Image (cartoon, rainbow, N blue to C red; front, side, top):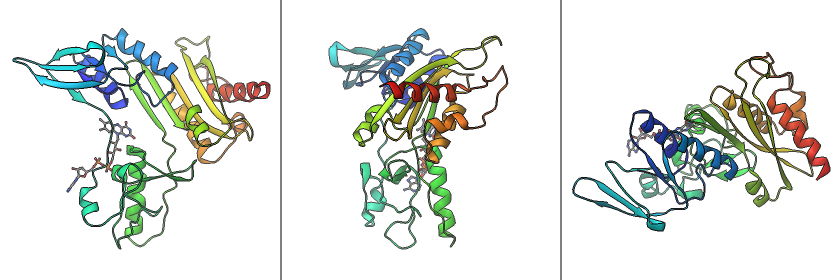
Length: 300
Ligand SMILES: Cc1cc2nc3c(=O)[nH]c(=O)nc-3n(C[C@H](O)[C@H](O)[C@H](O)COP(=O)(O)OP(=O)(O)OC[C@H]3O[C@@H](n4cnc5c(N)ncnc54)[C@H](O)[C@@H]3O)c2cc1C
């Protein structure tokens, strides 16, 4: 039984199933992969079921008890499952006891407060990675986004500064991608609900196109959800879902690069992206999604 349907729980469901182990996934969230829109979560849940994973959403686990020969996991709605192994993948909390005992301040989600040089208020003490707050480039404030990509960049900044150079962490956009069986799901920036909460006049448009030219064998549908500010046209975020070989992660990276540079949705159409029929179209799916956003924004 895997408790938690975030990306780590889902990757483990894939890995254990591939090893021939029967998996039951249980999550208190209404869909799996709650970091993306529920429509994408539903597609991922279907992918899990098709590969034999039993998926239980909207189910909080209350107890794990030791039976004679197995563990028993029980929760909401009469959920009871006996199993040999329980894996908890229920989120990340920074472990900051050591630093707090030494007087370091903590902020968002209990992570260490830092400046963009990754310095703390204590002289010559730097923080980086999962224990530290993250400068959010789009929101222009600190957040908590524990990711390997962020940790590496922060670690380099801390190291450079510790050696007497001056550099600043340029900020995270929460860009991430995950492969679950034959699907890849990726996101960067803000979703509709997150953008609204931050006060943007957010508008999201989903476009479905082939990942490459239909006449070249093996084309698969790629879903792209673009979120932008209706008033200014600024790109705010993107979510993608497609087949494993559909270059989903590199396509989300195009959006991440555009976000990093504060581009508008419309400007994405002007980027000189590569094209060959087995790989893309003269307008890449990223650009078709951006154009679709711009055209539909005008009519909403
Ligand atoms: C299963 C899994 C999959 C992931 N997949 C991805 C992914 O695909 N993409 C992505 O971007 N991120 C991913 N992450 C997140 C990524 O691994 C973390 O964000 C990243 O490792 C954090 O780096 P870090 O150096 O801050 O911490 P860690 O990598 O956790 O390193 C901390 C180190 O400090 C040591 N340590 C702790 N306390 C002490 C102490 N008191 N004394 C001495 N040593 C100590 C630990 O032993 C450890 O070696 C994944 C995480 C998990 C758990």
